[in-house]
Image 1 (cartoon, helix red, strand yellow):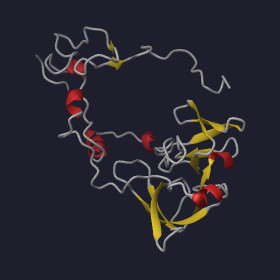
Image 2 (cartoon, rainbow, N blue to C red):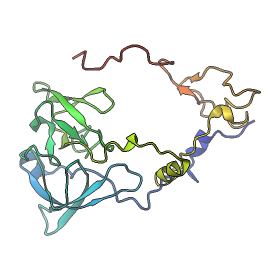
Image 3 (cartoon, rainbow, N blue to C red):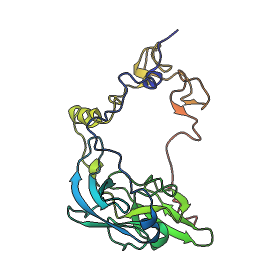
Length: 257
């Protein structure tokens, strides 16, 4: 009987935990309320912060509470062009300006948006990484849906009532500069979670990995593996529909519509 493979050990926790102590908090849109559904509410950007483990900066935005004498502080994704002291407007009747939060039904086709909700009121799900954005492709007013082009290039249909921030997430071009040395990679992943360095399966011993061992580094079995295999064997290309290089012209989803 061999060892538990590393993927199995990751599920337990112990040394495989997320480094959350220094993080600034969950980055979400405002909770959906009456003022956003029927009008708008104004907030002010108090501060632009670096969130450890996140490539994009975060904006601390302060709103007046509509029901009690207090201020609500929200952490929103910082869009390109946002600055401290800027007014942010959230709601159906807000203007189409970078940083504002509007429902997709109030946004014309071709607009660049980010931090888009998947379901109404979930406070942001798509296009949240640094430099990411989604494009509003079409509105279907009969069905009440909107078609988006996501950063992956795929198309997605969501309800037209879901909210999104206008603009591109700040911090774009982060991956253009190479890490160059292992020390930079170490510090990059140290504040995220224990997922670096990654050792190839073929470089391990047979007790540690199904691909380990042998006089030459070779897999020695098909690299594809079924989705329902037990966790110690479930390594390689899991549930692969196809393998090999992508050849020929990439067909984009644009061609179909």
